[in-house]
Length: 117
Length: 114
Image (cartoon, rainbow over all chains, first blue to last red; front, side, top):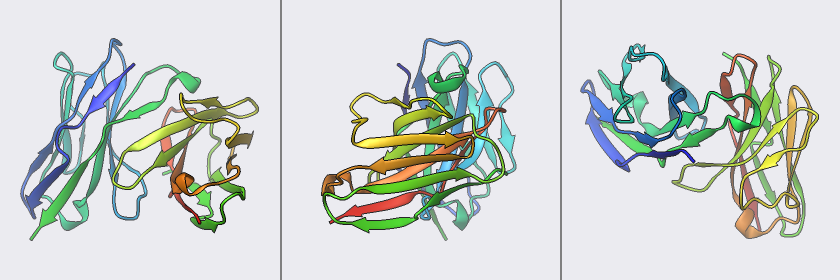
């Protein structure tokens, strides 16, 4: 079974600075998807960024980018120019490329990000 | 982006009663729907996966007779917590996946069992 590990329960960053959240995973599959989700105090899960394992290029979405190291099974999230609205719980997630019920998201334990003035 | 709604957003019930939570995909047809449970300050734990018109697949340790899932159409799934007890109090989140493989989450339902 796949596992996702987030070793940082809490992180703090000053506004306008950059922070990196860590995520490692374990799988025997060669193709899969990786995600970062944000859960603000409202508890609505919001997709931040997505990476397909077959793509070598790291995904980027505005201020959010990932460092995907397939051999090391590492998938870190970098937030640049941090804003107060970035404060939230961040979950790393893995998904098999299979369709149907076999394809489900496996979440890490989450990292709580605080943004300070 | 696609929208998934949940109803109710909050529910308080007495121990022993049953509670139904609805999950709807508002602007797309969901091939698969998922139900998660989240305890305070913890991650999302998948309870079950369902496809329209077929029985749900429950994760290990989840009682299928206690957490009844009905996926009646491509836009509606319901979770019924039967004979609720205080330990069932939690935050329940549904998500829906469409054919493009994108998955969207509902806003969640907070269940409190007295």
